[in-house]
Length: 399
Ligand code: C5P
Image 1: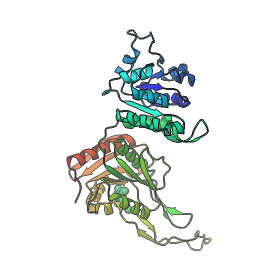
Image 2: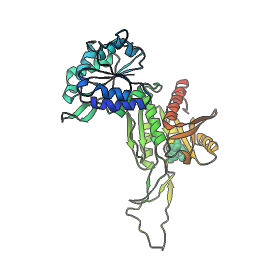
Image 3: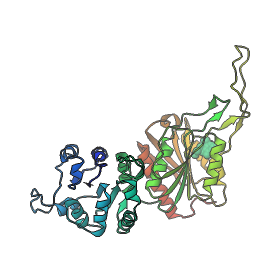
Image 4: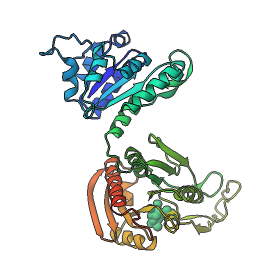
């Protein structure tokens, strides 16, 4: 890919961005404007990208002296980061008086998409001229990433910061994922629940939430509008995902039912506690020094997946079965008992907290074992599978 830098203080982040893109497997050809060279040197970017950097349309190193043509013919995308207000204005008018704007104009528009990551002062960003230019740039087919919001180099606070390098990397990865769930609404539950015993203690389990968060991310990458209802976990919210934090099964139940009503898909990955304490102590239960130990009375929590599957206009419901034994038999039992079209079976102890997983899809037609893979890779494959099922049978799984 071509990474273009125009002039702005956010150029300092471009060094890290090159590293992130290369770590993610990209080949990065850096092109800089003259203004960008005021902020960071070509030497730095050459060293990090392991390729000579191009800065001029008069660069005689190219045999045909046509860097503006050659650089994009093999590229999968052009990302301009940072994209200054001035550079955006140039792009919009099809101006081409430096190598970067020239190659943006000369790129094969169908084959080589243009992405821009604006970076500028908040007043410049909010200015009607910039907003008009950005809207037109989008109408011309460019994808605008960000900008973010927060502290600015000038000391002001507001919109206009370039997205962080890791965010830009993830945006670019997402850009290239198939959009099988475009226009769909997807609801995901993830993580454990925590059922209090008293103000300091509770019942919970070892679910990390990683599988559910990966599914939420993959669904968002596939173009869905995603709501993620998360129990207590220490994970960052995937980009473009609406997150609702809950603690107990009762809270997760209420949040999930409210969101399920207008969802097309529900993926229940949460390891919901089966029981809660019948009456939560208002104060910390004290040790009675060897005399007697407290006895906890438990009551059953509502089954969220089964409740969503009972809705008259239910979404396509996908459940998870985490078991320690008799995995496929238990999974098939859940398929019937919860009345859902698809259960994903995995071994509980072997997946909780891990970055990879081995799963088997259990549906009315049979069992389909998928090879062990990273949770994100599995999540992307699962999202594609759900998209295909929705496509094949739009009311799939409806009673
Ligand atoms: O019944 P069991 O807990 O084994 O079923 C697991 C599946 O059901 C998972 O998809 C889980 O998210 C969902 N579930 C639920 N509400 C519960 C218990 C489980 O949604 N109270």
